[in-house]
Amino acid sequence: MGSIGVFGGTFNPVHNGHKSLLVGAMQAVGFDKVIVLPDKIPPHKQAEDLVSGEDRLNMCKLAFGDMNGIEVSDWELRQSGKSYSVITLRHFHEVYPDDKLYFIMGSDMLLSFHKWYCYEEILTLASIVCISRENDTTVQELQSYADGLKQKGAEVIIVSQDPFEISSTQLREKLKKREDCSCYLDKNVVQYIETNKLYSEG
Image (tube, rainbow, N blue to C red):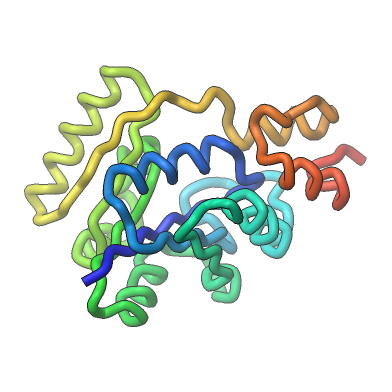
């Protein structure tokens, strides 16, 4: 039985924090493969300044292209409606029936997990790998929340990591102002954004 990580997100744009989160998950679990999926319509947040799915897919291919064992998939982008995680996990459970799935997320996502569509079914389809990028208080809060999920039969793995100092929203604002974001983004992603004039004002 193999182990497959599933890492979804808006990736608008994909940045070094996403890469760091994924590296942390890979070091903690040792996946045979990780599937990265840009979502079509994020169900949990407003998609502000959302560039096309094709652009986000291309940026993910550039950002994760130098990492072994990563497959960037357009599966969610090809679906209709909102990108509910349970539907994605059902699909990959059918594709990889003999493998164990791990659903990778950040700490902010875990703490609102009980509000997700069919969240209890998600717990039957995959183990949760949560990367904590906050302070010690939040780590304790995460552990308490994870303990509650474990009582429902879930497997939850929490991995502590230094926080990334900027969000995708803040990055988009910097890019609009044409500020240098090369310390936050893969160099190939920076070039792609400039070439395709993404996130620019006017």
